[in-house]
Amino acid sequence: MTPPEDRWLDEAAGPLVRPYAMTGGRTRSKRTDLDMIAIIVTAENISVDTRRLGPEHRFIVDACRQPLSVAEIASDLDIPLGVVRILLGDLLEQGLITVGRPAPVSQLPSERVLKEVINGLQAL
Image 1 (cartoon, helix red, strand yellow):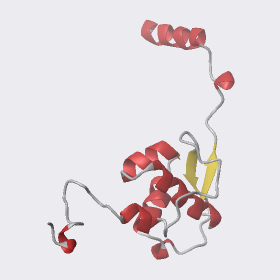
Image 2 (cartoon, rainbow, N blue to C red):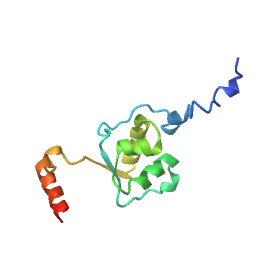
Image 3 (cartoon, rainbow, N blue to C red):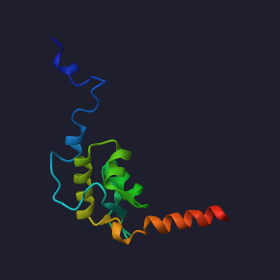
Image 4 (cartoon, rainbow, N blue to C red):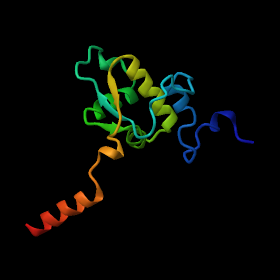
C-alpha cells in the first residue's frame, strides 16, 4: 500500500486540491450571466489594490485589459470553467471587471455583404 504522504504527489494527476483552494471551497458562482461567451473586460478605474488578490485573480484582471470570453480565460489559466466563473464572480463583486455580451447574430453583417467585401478586397 502507498504511504499516505505519497498519495498527493502523483505527477500525472496534476493539482488535486488546487481548484477547491482557489475558490475558498465554493462550488458555484452567485452570478448566472457568466456563460462561456460572456465578454470580460477590466474596469476602467480600479480602486482596489490588486496586489492583495490571488495570482489567478490578478491574471484575469491583467489579461482582461483586452476583452476576453469566459472560455478564453479558462483556457489561458488552464483551470475548469466552473472555477473561472467563481473567480470572475469575486472580481465582479469588487468592481474590478465588467461583463458584456457579444453582438447578436442579427446585428452582424450578412454572408452576402461579407462576400462582397472579400471580392472587393481581392479586386484591389
